[in-house]
Amino acid sequence: MRHTYKTMKNLLLLTFAYLLIGFASISCKENNENILSFHAIIPEPNEIISGKGYFNLNPETGIIIAGENDLENELAILQNILKNSLGFELPSKESGSSNVIMIDLNKSLNLKPEEYHLVIDENKIHIESSSTSGIFYAIQTIDQLIPTKTGLGLVNEYKIPAGIIKDSPEYAYRGMMLDVARHFFEVDDVKTLIDQLSNYKINHLHLHLSDDQGWRIEIKSWPYLTQIGGSTEVGGGKGGFYTQEDYKEIVNYAMKRHMTIVPEIDMPGHTNSALASYGVLNPGIVVPEANSYIADRQKLGIKEVDSKVSALYTGIEVGFSTIDFKNENTYRFVEDVIREISEITPGPYIHIGGDETLVVAMEDYIPFMEKAQEFVQKYGKIALGWDEIAHSKMTPGNIAQFWSREENARMALNQGNQILFSPATKIYLDMQYDSTTQIGLHWAAYVEVDDAYLWDPMELVNGIKKEQILGVEGPLWTETITNRSEIEFMIFPRVTALAEIAWSKKENRSWENYKRKITNHYKRWDDLGINYYKSPKI
Ligand code: TNX
Image 1 (cartoon, protein in one colour):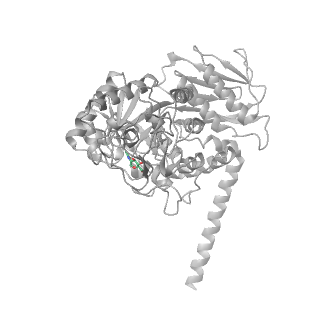
Image 2: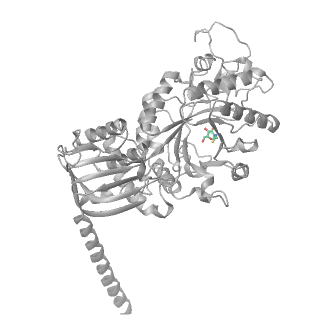
Image 3: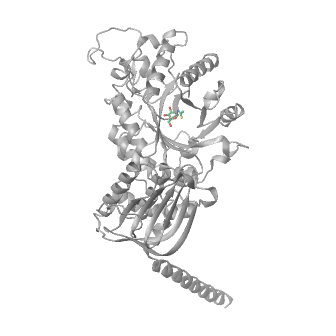
């Protein structure tokens, strides 16, 4: 009897709960889908104030450039988004008109770098910023407020909910790294990635341009680096490389999307592709026998004989290579490479690697990394290095990229240098999601989407201050990743988690909210044909 009473009481409670949920979802539906999209922006904006009514975006909507400066680039990007998603571009209109998108670049507003305000009412969408990058990010936010593609039901009018978004980033450096050395990726693949990342307000793309398995950037003063060193990749495929013109094309494409390219030449370890190209750099290292072969120089069009070169390497084991520290040619080589790359890199950074030098003694490593930093400084750049670089004396302003060791990060901080956070257990984009993931590695951890989301750069090194953090970067190593679709599978939806960690305020981040938002982005990715991981956690 008592039992029945309890069951009845439970039933009543349950019914009541269902009724409540039912009402909540009805009122949610009444709000209409567009309003939901207003709350699916990734990365989460600083401040969203919902307004009343809608702005009707239609072919009669015009654009007004109210600002001071030339906004041709940002205007073209906006028009392109509108054309792809709605099927039409918008005419320009006279100031004072209604039904407009007004772009207002106004330095005297004194907004922070990259900050923007988006004010949407029934008459206009007003974009305000003190920087062109802020205007660009406002446009990316608008992009997420409208449908991805019209092919699936062309709309002639789209209602954007009224409201105000005030937004600016937590960290200046929000990045991803693509390893083009283990497998080579064509210029078009890199451009696609730049588009995908910039939609999530990521503003740095680090290209890992050299490693044991391949040299991917033309160096005019050392042509065999690409001719020989670029001729293969992991698994023995044909490899490839970027000419300096290709590289400039990538840099310009990125620049238009307010993204900085960070080129890396990994030294003094991870250098086998250089040693296989020029024997003079080779101290006689032993390349693992499996997965290696001596380049057929004749077939590659090279007459000159060189008996000191190492074998080309197509495996994935690391740590066996180093350049010859005792040979002055090594320093000429390092300087030439840094000079040529600096000349074609408008961004402030050159990454000099410095990781996993298992066959290098500290007394060789330290002076070498110091010398490499000197060259970077000589050519007017800031050096980045993997966290081991902190063993050497770091030039003021240079950055240590934390990937594994807290004590290395601490050494960098003690020298007064900043940290870029790429913890392998949290945000290595090549780590498998779980034991069923077909590609990727798991030496650091399995990194599910919640692992990639639920961390904060302030928590990894005890006592670190916010101003000691440059930002966050997610590296995608490509030993097992061979094409664009696999890149997408490994980065979505983890790189979007990174975007939110690096851009959004901690108090505005929530895993529950992120999960909800991501399902919305799944739809966008489906429309765009992006291959993503459908996580059971979402
Ligand atoms: C470690 S992280 C490496 C890379 C590998 C990667 C694979 C770092 C600085 N070095 O050489 O590709 O692991 O996850």
